[in-house]
Length: 373
Ligand SMILES: *Cc1c(COP(=O)(O)O)cnc(C)c1O
Image 1 (cartoon, rainbow, N blue to C red):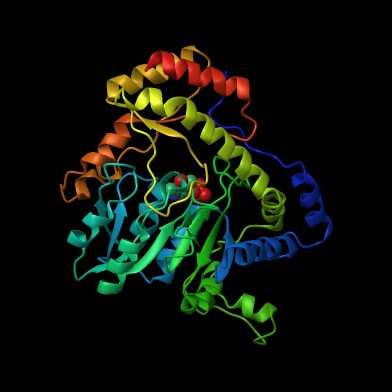
Image 2 (cartoon, rainbow, N blue to C red):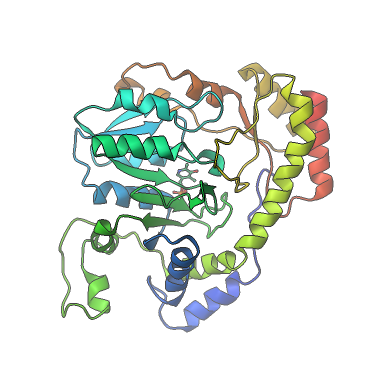
C-alpha cells in the first residue's frame, strides 16, 4: 500500500532530544526553542515568533490576544480545519462563514466586505495547500473597517505572496508542525506576531497569564498573575525535534516541489480537458508543495476514484466537511449557501505527497489516475 503520508525524519531528531534531556532543562523556552524562534525570525523577518504545542493553540492565543468577546464576529472560510473556527468560538465569537473561490479552496476575498458588520472584529484567511489568499484585498478591507487579520498559515511554511512570506502579512499568524505538514514535530505549532503591540501580551498569555518571560530576562524582580492565559509553550523535547527538521527545510522543500511538479507535468494536460480542476495560484503566490490535490466533477466520481485507487494499493484522501454544515454549527449558521465550500467538500482529492515517496510509486499513482479518470 502506498500511504497517504509518511513523516519525514532528518535523523538528528533523537540526537537533539538527547542533548535537550542532558542539558538539564527540558521544560519550555530553553536552547532549542530559542534556536527555532531565531530561525523563523531571521529567515522570514517575522517580528516575533513563539512556539506553541499546536497550531490550534496558536489560534487560541490569537483569539485571546485580540480580546475576542462574546458576540464579536469573526469571518472565516467554511472550508477549513475545525481549529480555525473553534479557537474563536471558544471565546464566544459569532463565526461568520465565507465561501471559497471558484478556482481554489481559499476564502473568496471579494465576498468578505458584504459580511462585515459593526460587530466584526477579525478576518481569518486560511492559505489552503500553502497557496496564498488574496492578501492585498483582505488587508485593504481590514484597514478600511479597522479589523484584525489572523493568517491560518498551518499549511503555509516557506510560501510567499508578492515576495512576502505567508504568516508575515496579517497582524498575527498561526503555523502547524503536525506530522502531516511539511515540517513536523509530531504535534506542534507557532504564533508569528507581526504587530509589535502584541508581543508582550503574547508572552504573558503563553506563560499561564504570568510575566515569567520578562522575569527570566531580568526585566522585573518577581512575577505573578497579570492577565488571562494558559500553558501554550512546548517542552524542549518538542523543540529539539523541530530544530532537526528546520535544519533540513530547503532539502525537504526541494524534494516536495520536485514531486509536485512531476504530478503537474503528467496529469494537468490530459485531465484538464476531462473536467478535472487543478490547484490555481493567484498572481504573486508561490508554491510550497504542501499538497497536490485534484477536484473531481462530482461526489460520485470522487467516491469511485478513491475506492479504485485503494484497490490498486494507493491511499488518497479527502477532507473538510464544510463547517457551516457540521453537527456543532449547522443550527447556528445564518443559512447563506456556500456552494464552493460544499463543492470542495464533495469533490477534492489529496494525492500522496511526502519526502520518501519514490519515483516508481509516483508513476503508479499517475498511471492509475490517467486510467481511472
Ligand atoms: C493542520 C491545520 C490546523 C491545525 O494544526 P494543529 O497543529 O494540528 O493544531 C489548523 N488549520 C489548518 C488549515 C490546518 O491545516
